[in-house]
Length: 185
Image 1 (tube, rainbow, N blue to C red):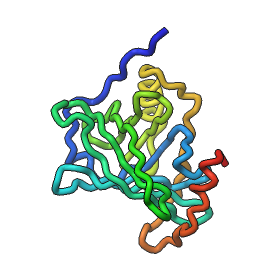
Image 2: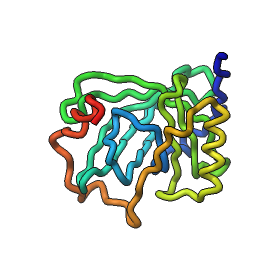
Image 3: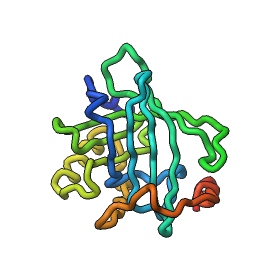
């Protein structure tokens, strides 16, 4: 049986979407350390209308990060279907990798969101705060299920009581997590 087309947000207010988002849960990805905590993304609107993306996570007390950009997949469409581009590996960025970033749901106050992509291999639940109440979390999980996602793959992301400071955190300068991730470790 064919999966239905995913419904995506229409008329996303890009300026309201900018800022910091905490990863509440996600599908495992080879692009993120499996033992990552305090994972978050920060979005900043560029003057050309693209979005600067900073993804951060902490493993064993060290900060890993990658920067990229996002842009509308179809500038004429009002659907929140974006493309994101990163250069890999993060410690020597030379290989461009582009992926889909579809906003499947966002609450009216822009406080939590469900992000997916057409293959349904990746899914994120994001929130402006490091914690999301269980009722709202379950509603987002249900929405993902309705969109054809196998929500049994969702892993909740641990967060510290006090989110770490990017500027003062020791950095993972070896990129070892990224190399391990290629081999599924």
